[in-house]
Length: 121
Image (cartoon, rainbow, N blue to C red; front, side):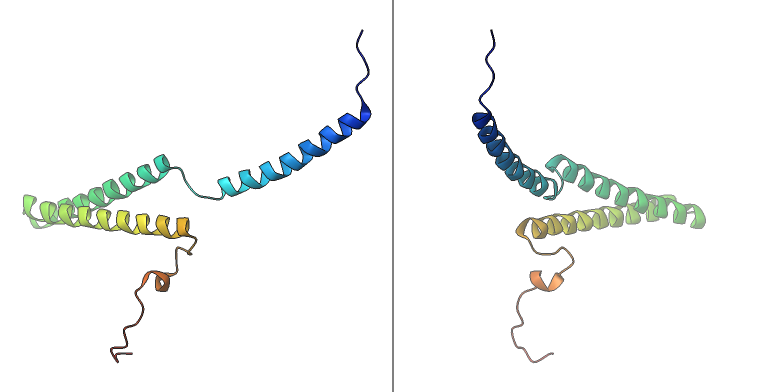
């Protein structure tokens, strides 16, 4: 009832499949090396912000307990922790842009404006 498959057609099909899988593997490797998903980046930034605030609040609370002036250092270091968290978030966003553009993340000279020749160095 069933016919034997044509060996020439099978070989041609195998060659086409091998070409396609080679191209597909290259795409998968490029996609895997491209970085993190947007959700992972968002969670990373949220964690950086919250951890900065918690660390600032903890330091402020500890200093307030040490000196007996409860709300003063708590508020000051809470705000400083928030500012530090936002700073880290901005730095992370810049690093993500650099890696997306193809520039290494640690290369600060690539992001710096060119020297204007003001004679300072």
